[in-house]
Image 1 (tube, helix red, strand yellow):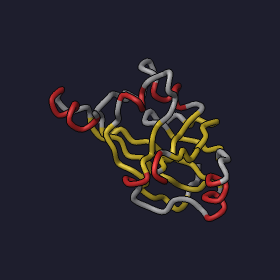
Image 2 (tube, rainbow, N blue to C red):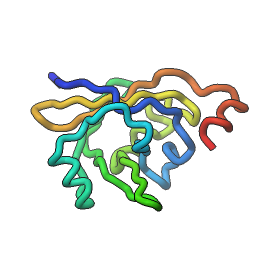
Image 3 (spheres, one colour):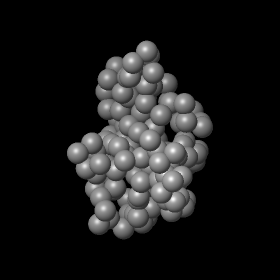
Length: 137
């Protein structure tokens, strides 16, 4: 994709809500973000409740287009970014990505022709059941 400006946005363990088909989103909690990956124009668009179209390189290295980055406001002025739209296809159990509850992933951002893109890396398999309950619930 000839990307530039690669940054590690997030490293997290996947929770059940990230993988539920009925939800259809990957949460990117503000408190876990490691880099300022958005332009001022993108921040303004997200603050105005606009979605940003993004592409994602999946762990299986397939490029998925049609995802959207959105900002969801929670209680007490807390917010999270979320990847929506085509996320369900990325997280689906029959996809070749091997995403599982408790699995450690990294989300990287980069720019391709000026457009915001992401790359999702499956870092490690889920921990044991006891550890999984402590990290995701």
